[in-house]
Structure formats: structure tokens, C-alpha cells
Length: 330
Image (cartoon, rainbow, N blue to C red):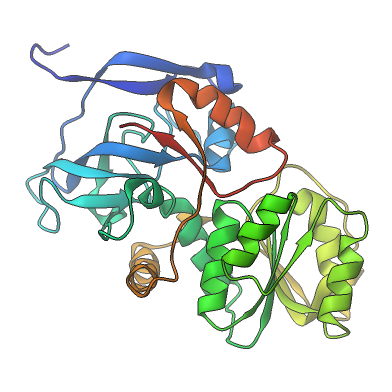
């Protein structure tokens, strides 16, 4: 190691597997930004289900080992590469991706994945924007092509992406229905844009949704757990309705006939299929949401870096989401 190279604490993964493969190390070299890169002193980092899929080795994108997880951080610019003009040391920012990994005291990011964080939002909220809001925006506006006046059901509305979807859908003039699995979760969903909320742990909640939406059905479903809900979703859709699959944790049997009479669609969404131009477009819309005030992330469970394995366990196995899970690095 080069003499004089500064060191930091970071989580390193040396092999794919369960949460126990997340190792906290205190002798990781702080990276140096080149060209269009910035170095960020991380204050908080989002924990997303996708982090656990990547860590387990089951995701379509496998990083080279060893690696540091973490895509959406919020923090302060520490240094910039020579080709960076949009940011300077001391700027408050958030990211939609990182180069060197966000579960660390410092992270490197490409300047086009970094965005200014308005003063009215704190760093915890900043760490809850990247993956959730950009995914929800892509799902609603790009994949579902929602129009004002349509109805949307956010199936699993109390987590990071779900709350983002409710806030965006309400701001864009949709009728918003949400589901959550706990009383606290239901309350959060109603406070963040949903007109109605249903408890997806109740045996007859699908009947309650059907009663609420009537004969016509619902125009769009944003689906967080397709392996459980997809078959029911197809029966809830309106003519020309679409299910947008944001999350799925296994296979499910459906009857394709359920799509035929209604001419409905099942559309998958992956944030990282977005082009640079699309990211800029999403960012412009979300920046407006921050300024106007409808974009306000709800923070859920918070963990220090030492408890990251517990965070990975909880995001998959906890009984019901209540806001966005984050790691604190202060």
C-alpha cells in the first residue's frame, strides 16, 4: 500500500453468500477521484433489497470480488476529479450509484450519478432518494405511462419505493391505493399520498380492494412482491391495465388467460436500464418535488455500519416495512 494513503472503515464482501459475508474493515484505502469522478464523505447510505440479491450472488449483475455494497448515499463532496465542473468540495449531495460502494466512510461516484441535496432535506432523507424515488418514477411515468385521473394500486406501499410511488402518483394527479402489513405501515401510507390503504395480511383484503375499485378495476399496479401477488393483480386490473413488476423473490403460477379479455400487460422495471438522459429527466422531476415539497422521504430503521448484517437480515425478513432503511456513518 502506498505510504501516506489515507484509510477508512468500509464493508467488504470477499465471497457471495448470506449476511455474514459482510465484513467491516478499518484499513481500506480512501479512493482518489479521477476525471469525471467525485469523492463523497458519506453521512448516510440507503439499504435496498437489491443490495441483498447482489451480495447473495443471485442477481443478474455480479460485481468483481471483493467489493463494497451500497448505491445511494448522501454526504458532502470531499474532492473532485479534474474534469468535474458541477460540484466542489463542501457541496451537499446524494447519489443514484457509486463506483467504490456506499457502505463506507468515503465513496467514489461518477459526476453524472450525483445530485445536489437541498438544504430542507437532511442526509438521512438524502440517502432515501436514489434507488426508491428514481425507481418509482421510472415505474409510474416511463413504464406504466400513467395519466392524471387514472388509478394506481401500490402493492407494498410502506417501504422506500412504495412511499416514493405514493407521493409521486398523488403529485401527478392519480387516485392512489396502497397496501401495508402493519398498522404503523398503513398509517404511513395514508400520510404519504394514498387515498385508501388496505392490510395485505388480512385474508379478505383483495375483496376489499375489489369493492373499492368497483367493476372497472384499477389502471396500474406497482408490484413489490410479484411472486406472491401477480395472479391476484391480474384480476384487479382494468381493461388495458398494467402491472409493473418492481420486486419479485421467486416464481409464481399465473393463468395467461387473465390478461386476454382485458388486454392487460405485465411489465418489468429495472432502474439501471435507464439511459443517462432518462436519469436526467427523472432527476429534474424529482428535484422539483423536493423544491415544492411533495418529495419527502420517510426514514425507517437506522443501523450503524457494525450492524449491517442485521440490516440485510431485517430488510428481507421483517414483518412489515415502515419507511426507508438506512446505514448511518456519522
